Amino acid sequence: MKIAVSTDERTDLVETLLKELNERHHTVEYIGPEAGEDADWPEVTCCAAELVASGAADEGIVMCWTGTGASIAANKVKGVRAALCRDAETAKGARIWNHANVLALSLQATSESILKEILDAWFSTKFSDDEWNLKQIERIRHMETKLD
Image 1: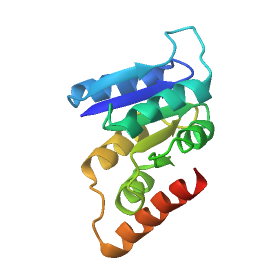
Image 2 (image 1 turned 180 degrees about the vertical axis):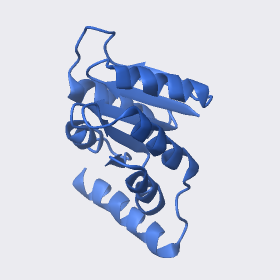
Image 3 (image 1 turned 60 degrees about the horizontal axis):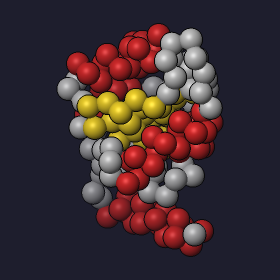
Image 4 (image 1 turned 30 degrees about the vertical axis):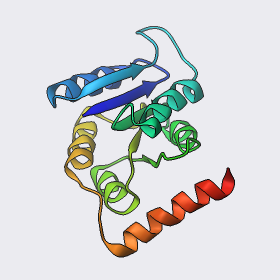
């Protein structure tokens, strides 16, 4: 699976994430600074989100200090359903009920062990095909077209 990864700061957590994705045999499209440099989180986040929306990446993982800004920026891109997840249960629910295709993470609040739990839940949980859930996702798509 091809994963677009963006961050505004290359921290130890980012290094752990990139290593984890590689060990899980994902292809990574990294959008962000090298160690010691900074980037603007709205710009790098939107680049990753656009890769997901266009189909150039299967999913995305976006990060900033709290994860909130990256989540907000990613959700501005039509077709993206980004979820800020601080634990595995939230990641699981975001996949099942919200069909989230972009995972937002906090660089500050996510530990290495929690990151691995979140990734396990994210990649092992399938979207629900329950009629009610599908109707909710269709409502979101309708809102996106209504706002164009």
